[in-house]
Image 1 (cartoon, rainbow, N blue to C red):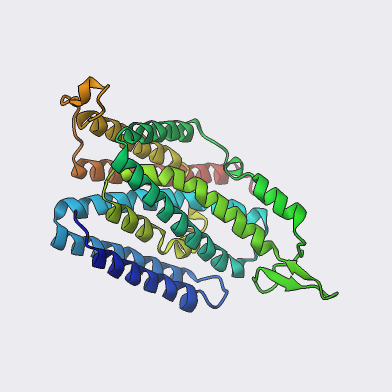
Image 2 (spheres, rainbow, N blue to C red; image 1 turned 90 degrees about the vertical axis):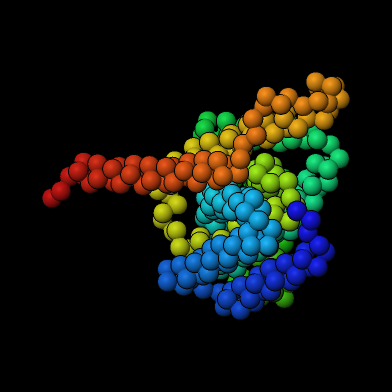
Length: 333
């Protein structure tokens, strides 16, 4: 794709406008969204992503639209997995329910900034060093292995050195107050609220999330414009999705396994494509290994969509059976 500068500019203006509406109009009143409100906004954001893909297909062709949809779906599923850690952060710092919407919005904005920086860096590396694909592929396969190996959700978030230092060195109040970063104590002293610590926790966690998501999306498309828009649309509505899913998050017990399959598939796909188009002189003389198959985008979309669907259905079936067993095993008076 040859994306003109004005298209980039128009896209950025439109996306910033949507985020501004979400931040300053929808989220200006701290409250816990109802299921109806959250569901409506999630539907709006998903609809926008679908319409963007349709427009992309009309202008740039089916290949570009397919890469966008596949990347968006992958990033969206990884973002849902990230919500597990957001839940832990909320509980760990006892964030009041009516302030959680604001906290999530801050986290999403930080994620957008960090992913934008990672996308720019990743695109620059790929254009200069083709061997980066081997590293990306190996990293995704390793990440898939760690997901299959399994990790207790409580262990997915640990207070890093920056959080520990902030809690120790900064003058902190014990109350969130009205959700601002600072407050004034009864003695007139300016104090930081726990909201600052929560923001630091979200920012450092978003940094770790980007390490997984950016190699994954570059395994689907090499076009920076598609990488960026897929990430933005995946993060849009994530705040409302947090409240919409609610207790359903706890029922997605096989989501990590599904994501492991997806990441391993993308990692292998990256390595195969790197082998097929290899131009590194000391590997096969830079001729490439033409026996290495190229995975078409339609197959990638089918594998990712099918894997996530199976993981979701299997999770709901298992948790439903477990609940029935618990009810049957509970003695009744």
